[in-house]
Image 1 (cartoon, one colour):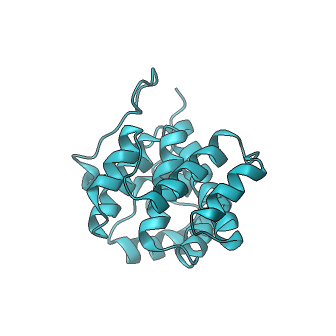
Image 2: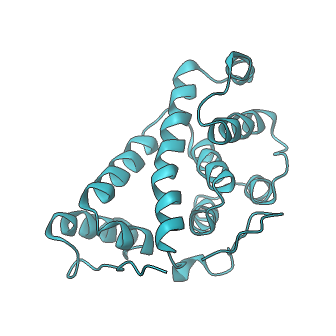
Length: 190
């Protein structure tokens, strides 16, 4: 297995240092994901920019987490599922919603379930969702803007999920108790 560096602001390439310091300022520490991404300043900057843009969408914080958690589920990302489980708790998002996504079951709230289903289809089908799926999503109370915002959220998670798969990112201490493996998966968490 190829070993990737887990950078600090001191060991990172010069072009990653400012971003790592900003991440540390926002979170109080540098998560292992960003510490690994720092080996590519462009990846780190791109992920950070997409994260910020998605946080400014018209989707509510709960809806944003549904998109992120669903993408993490479909991409089988142990690190991001654990991280977003804990972020959801910090944001006081209903644990029933989070546990439904983690377990691969339906969300009781019909609108959030429509978002969950649409996001899952988008990720699994690599964007080829078909007009009927878009119409069903819109009929649930979402907008065309929301359709494209889901694309942004899924794209953000593609960068982090794929990075975690390749570099075998270790969970951060704050994720203790939120460890996860996709139900029925034969893959093992890194």
